[in-house]
Image (spheres, rainbow, N blue to C red):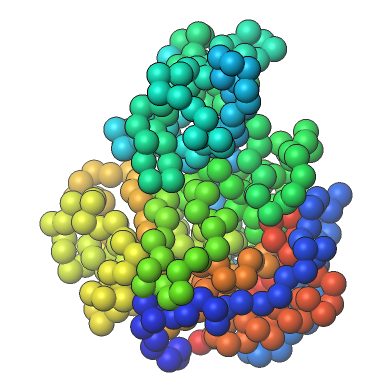
Length: 411
């Protein structure tokens, strides 16, 4: 049992380690499942590779994958004067209920963006981007916000959806710590083989190591797979800049999970391994939504959504078994005739948090002083230092295109 710690008082400096730049993988290996895999269990560490996963996961377990698909969210515009400006699409405006709806907009759409060189964008100035196919995409500044901008995009081929526009006009948003220009190989390799639901600006990178062959081998071992969706936001790249976590605002991200998936998770609730931190955040969000549904059966969907601090402040003392939570969530959905849950989550998982849904986590090696590293520390305790030092000492490659780990949680 983890020692309960107030997450607000956590000093991010305590989760710092030295990551030499040369240890950051700039390119993926030629074979996805050839990446090294550090296996941690009950304090011990050993080395393997991803293609050995069928021998490392017990038969009868279920791997939970995030099937989000990375969109080509970087757009290189020109000002009327000829100067270049890059827009990075973060998330749809609040006028749309979810990412899918916004992606299907035709003719125009409003999107929250980061803007490179925003100080040089004069009021009323319209940016333009022309593709080889003749698509003309325009960007108008609708609203300035703190560090972000609401942009109205419009295009001259109104039969195209915004998703199709991004395919034609955008570039793959590889992470900022990969200090090179994106190339054609990234369009394929910065995407999982099972990606389906468009909406992320970053890949769920633990899944980049899986191949169709590896998935078939896992199935042959009676290791099931289950798909959930969390659309990854750009906040996943941001190191925590606040001294303590109380001053850090966790980014919110959309989840989309079907009723059938929740039923499957209920049946396998004691044998789940999350593939990636985004899958884990989705699973833990579902658990706490179920807890809320148990105590507040008349709650609206907005009341079930999980904010950054409320699990620690309001709900920890009301925890129930995971199967009971998922059953309550299914009952809540049945009463509203819902086939899927679409909402935002801000769940923050830090040391002091007890995992409710998983036995293990498959994940890459994360940046120092990041919320993802805090999540790893929540799963394995102070042994995160031993794990990361071992990886540094034994030639493991770090971050999105790097190697990974299979971490069995402390029980």
